[in-house]
Image: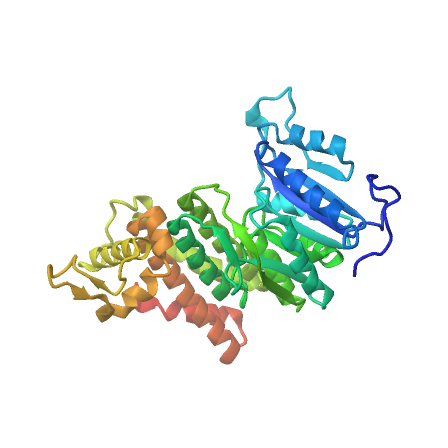
Length: 407
């Protein structure tokens, strides 16, 4: 609930226990955008004293190499409720000594430094206008632990759209995230989230992700704690930023790392050893392939490697070129072929299309071989251990023997 006490002075620094809302803004090289963003946030908060009797604005400088810190200090000189958190670059050191930890690290620092009964995390571009926070407040007022802005919910008003490719990649990424990490949430990456302050500080204190995946990790923790999260359609205008492929590459790697880390946390040490052992065995088995992925060819595979790599490449081309993924004229030209004739290929090539687009079909092929056999052995291990035997050694041997015919 919001605290009802007021500030000791209209523009003074809030005393502990009097902060209704903390706004956290992570920033990296945002010297040009920040002055407008800070001015907009402060003007809104000053204009709504009924809702925000006591507030603070925390900007986390994540190792910027420009004048981001100076812009925050200038704003703080006029508004004492603005605070700068982080380690600004030392003027005596070269820029190469400044380390950028990532958005997740910056947001975590800001939330843990907050004192508000509620904490709003918003990006420096302020794509959703600060006025939209009123919609999020309404959800916390009725009992939700968090309310997150959404561009995917009905009623969202997207005034300036992203590049079509980036929009498509965002939708694909959100589908993957919903399937493997945060069920029910349609837009995890909109940078506009309001949390109950105590619950936010507790969850962010346990978070470990330093990159973009902090959003997924935090929402996953809320889901596991059974703290209700409301997804609220908001007004949103794209402000530009990193390229689509660069962002997707980080997103794919971050999501994989997040899910692997989450799975490992739930496993007993003995189970981790078994799965790691399977992985090492299959890495050794395919060591020649991994040593020179672009030129190596799997012995005794006939034309299978050519066929798989072709399917991976053409599927990625279709997915990101917005072509029909189920038909191609690249075979049997000009009549073409129905790619659904081999559904097993599409079952792997479609979800792995981002990997193929970023790293090439040869990498996807090696990944499917190594990861597929490791996952299959691990699945047999879990089945044997849970249903048939009590000995982990026996289950581990059984999992390995189940694939012995593939050697």
